[in-house]
Length: 358
View 1: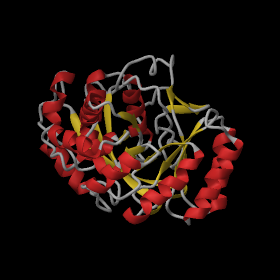
View 2: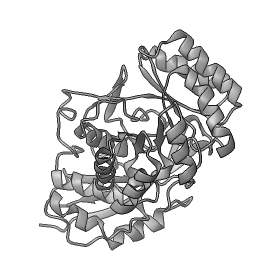
View 3: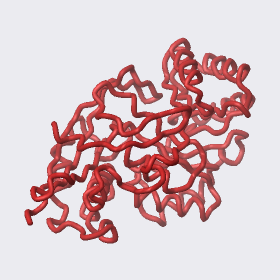
């Protein structure tokens, strides 16, 4: 039997429209792919994706291809024989390269399963059950955001997440008011994501004004790293607060527990590409549930390769809240989509070796 071949590939993904957050506007991003194949069994390919993001991922570079290749070269030449050996295998990649660890974990699970993109077999992969999702509204002008909202509502979505903090606050208030005036809390759930845009002095005031509109939650109202200030907001705010960027760079179980015990958020938002993969995400879930904190999982601008695996993993966690997985249509040059969105749900169908033609 031939030895498995491990290859690293790259693709620059281009956004259909500008993707605006309080950190800036995205028009393209690089993703890097780990492909494990065996010349004796060409029908089975293991695929994993690393997509480090500017301003968030510790391993981000404009071109991280060489760094990713070096990380992959650290992996033991002898592959795991089963899923119980995966954690030991990926441990060769340091924790401060979480997206690289995620790619390795994805690829080896896919390779070991030998089921053509079935990372986590379930009713989801059998197309018997979907994953509830929210619709994402990118920042931009008031008119641009309103257009996105109308399109998402027309699709039948019952949960929207609005990126806020890039336009003036009063315009954002008007936009949220217009949504709530025509859609009750029962009919439509509104989540907000500030990406740390509020300053500490203004945060309490803005949260109080936003609380008038039946907001489900707000992600990361102030910048990460301000634990005392965030803890105070979580205690005082009428809007439940979800930590997002705050979790990045926290890798040990002890540090994770210390963070959550100190801040006591109502929710945490989990992204396997920042959490060091599925195993890192599961550790966050376990600690959050011990502390009676809510959580949900979102993608982080992966291609359909990563999104497919994350959606399968998310289904396995039995969380009935809308998840942040409706990002498969963001790119003009994405891979053939293994996911289909319908009325606020992500449904699965199989992919066929995305990178074979690359």
